[in-house]
Length: 70
Image (cartoon, rainbow, N blue to C red; front, side):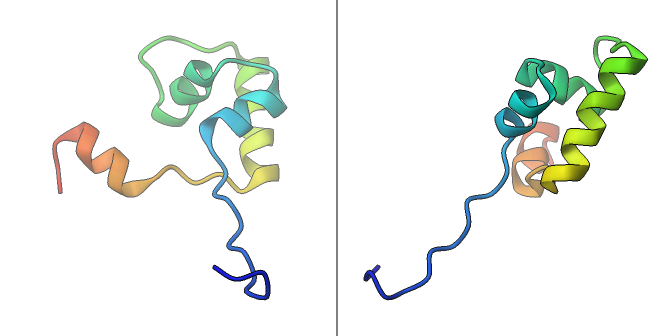
């Protein structure tokens, strides 16, 4: 890539959401995937607000691999 080409913005990661919400990336995963551990309502709201603010979208290809679907 040359200096004159625009750079593609980096995708928002689970770690980015966790950093903004002040939680671990595991807690973000629990909120996004609705488990396996319960998350306090206030924490869930903080994580959801960070997801909304950053525009986080889970990677569909990664989710398919984890769930065994392609």
